[in-house]
Image (tube, rainbow, N blue to C red):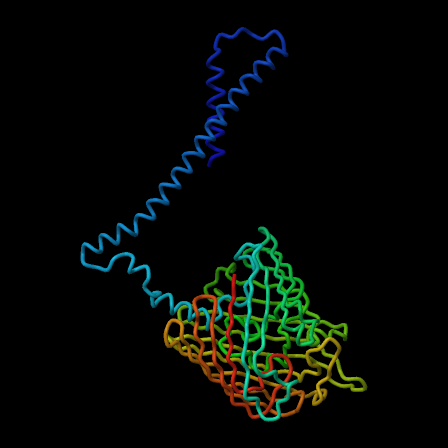
Length: 448
C-alpha cells in the first residue's frame, strides 16, 4: 500500500515539474537536457522522501490511537456494567477461566489435536523449550532389582528443544536430553534432529531422526501425558519412540471432499531394528491414517509397519518385523476415553547401541499389547485417571504382563504439574520406560 501511494505521488510530482516549465525552449544539447532531467528527478525523489516520512508518521499515530482506544474500551464497558449494578471490570479480569476454555483444553489434551503436526505453525525462536521432570519412586514390585527400577528421588527427564519454521519452505527440530547420560546410555542424548520441507499447505517432507508416527501413545509427549509412563507395548515394539529416515505427511483437505476432511496421512521409510541397532541393511516402512470427528469429539487411527529385524547369531527363520495398530480417543463432557491395541512379530532385540537379543525371542513368535485409559476432569486443574495395560508375549520372559494404574494430577498453571500414580502389576516388564514400582510422584515444568 505504501509503495503504491509513493509511486502515485512520484508520478504527480513529475507531472507538476513538467507543467512548471511549459514554455521551456527546445534543448540543443543532450548534456543540457540530461542535467535538467537529473534536477527534476532530484526534486521528485525529495518529494517522495517527504511523503513517505509523513505516511510513516501518520501510520504510527493511527496505531497509537488504536492501542489507546483498545485499552479504554474494557474500562468503559466495566463502567457501563457498574451503572447497571454488575461487578467492576477488574473483578472480571481476575475470575477463573470460562468453562468453555476449560473444556476445550481438556478436549485437546485427550484427543491430542496437535499430534503429528509439522513445525510450520510457529517460527523458530532462539529461545529453547526446556522440560524438566523429577520423580519419587518407591514400593518396588516383588523381584525388582536396582537395574530394573531406580527407587527414591531421580531426574526422570531433562530435555531442551528448538523447533519451528525457518522460512516459508523449511523447518527443523532439535531435541537434546541429558538424563540418559548418568544412566549410562549416551547414545540417547540426541532425541530429535530433523529437517522439514513444506511441499504445500497439505504436504510436508521430514528427514532425519524423529518420533515414529505410529498410534497415539508412541507420539504423545511426556510433558502432557497423564500417567507416569507410556503403555507397556510402547517400550517393546518402539523403544525410544524414534527412528531415522524420511517421512511424508499432511492432510487430505485439499481434495475438498467432506468425507475426507480432517484426515491425516503418514508414509515413511526408516532404518528400523530397535532404533540404535540398525544392522541388517534393510528398511522398515510405516503408514498411518487418522481422522478427527470434531462434531462429536472423536478421533480414530490405524497404523502399520512392515520390515525385517535382526536374528540372534546361529538362528534362522522368519525375521519379519511387521506391526499393526488401531487407536481411538473420545471426549464426552468431563469424561475422556482412549483405547489402543498393537500386535505383530515378537521383537528380537532390546534398546541398545549393539544388538541385545531378547532371551525369549524365537522366529515366528508374536506379541501383542493394548491399553484402555479413562480420565475425569474434577475441575479446571484437577484430574483423575485409570488405565488397564496388558502385554502378551514378553520377549524377555515369554510371559504375559498385566498392570492397572490409577492416579491424580494437578495443573500448576499452564507450565507445571504434579501427579500421583499407583500401580498394580502381576510381574515385571522390561526395556524402555519400564515402571516396576507401585508408587510414582512426578513433578514437571515446561518453559517455552
